Image 1 (cartoon, rainbow, N blue to C red):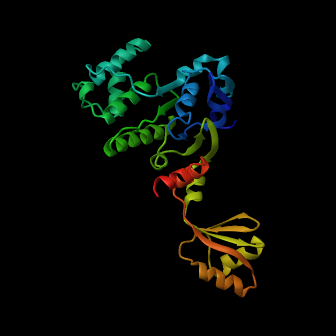
Image 2 (cartoon, rainbow, N blue to C red):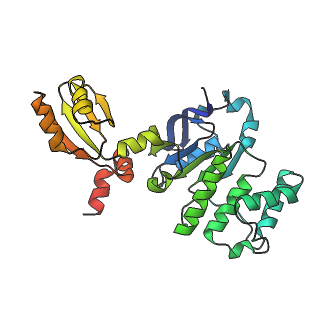
Length: 311
């Protein structure tokens, strides 16, 4: 489990007759911003609660630093959680909210720590403003500050941009990137892949409690990048023509009969012309462009329903 800070093995949560999470298995590496993407009700919150120690799994294991969580419950204390609502006291200031939580946690040197956290989340100039006067974005940032109490190794955020306006989304996004830059591993759930793609380095797609796919940011962007899909008899015959005759460098041999071409300056007819001149048969050639949301919908089997909605 090289580099992995968390590993899930067949994690399942059953509520009476409903299976909220079914045999979830994946790894999260230290320093990742791990995006858990899924529709509302897909099982994201339940999965995060199990990782954070708020729910016991029905079956399966969670390993932290190569050790099973049931062998050392102290690992859950190394997690900072913001799941559902932050649970703030609206009549108190941000400073007072943090101070109350620090007293509850038994953390000393509260004044220095509170000022540090308020500065980190961009609320250092709002010490006298009561939380009931905060915007949604400010409340989320304060909730993140509370989750950071005790300097956790992992920060878990459940739909942190839900209900925020564009300015609030930008504030939270910038905060997440800044925290990660300082070495914090972050697990973040969302049903908005387009926004999650601006921060996440790894993804897991969850649908009806099942992990459909885990994929890196680079792999996802490559799959959604505009490309020419070329089907031929043998890729080995084609690649010399692409490189030497058409000067194409950015391509991928997907399998023996399929090549993906990512060079935007080349046109389909140019490829057909030069391959035909070499006597190479072409079964099909087409341009392909897939958006992030479309990719997600295909993986969760919702594409047809999504298309019908907009007809």
